[in-house]
Length: 213
Ligand code: ADP
Ligand code: TYD
Image (cartoon, rainbow, N blue to C red; front, side, top):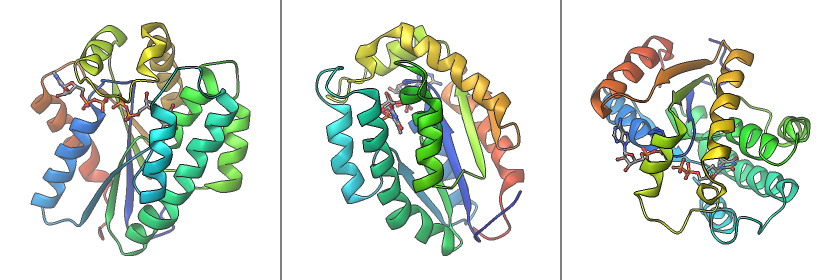
């Protein structure tokens, strides 16, 4: 796997409630137990400035922002996260595990309200210019994912309030994205028990780790 730095950059993607946060945390625990230096982070957020943007994009009415404005906000948050958290950790040879990254913008802003994928990709090229070394897609049926996400009871429900129809389109979009970038995507069935999925994630990720990290 090509590296422009010493560390390894792993992202988790999938619809809301698919188990990304749970699995990202368990993978971090697993790799730390093996003695690896791991930074566990998330988007939107992962740096103080990006966490402030997180509150702007995830709370409030579903129509609070247009899709175009959201592309700018998520990309601004990502740029800060990259500069302050991700790049320094990779340069230091660490494994960075990130709960969502640019593929989420390609899906949620790129497909949810018209076809803005090209705009997302252009801004990504201009301002981010980096893809993960490995992306774990947790595939999950939208009704189960929605029920799991709703059971969490948080204020960050702007996207969950778009409903299961959106999640169904996001699921199909993520599976198509995995076909578009087969070198870095690995798709895992999220329907099993937490430990079963975690074992599958560990089996998938471990052979792809750099010898540094
Ligand atoms: P995401 O980050 O993809 O939204 P989470 O990891 O936060 O998903 O999981 C959503 C909810 O579902 C949490 O309450 C979590 O404990 C639960 N959960 C996660 N994975 C499973 C699983 N494999 N089986 C049952 N419940 C799960
Ligand atoms: P997250 O906290 O990962 O939610 P969940 O745990 O429910 O999956 O992300 C919150 C929401 O932000 C999620 O509905 C997807 C959305 N999102 C975007 O729309 N664009 C993006 O670029 C990112 C990173 C997230």
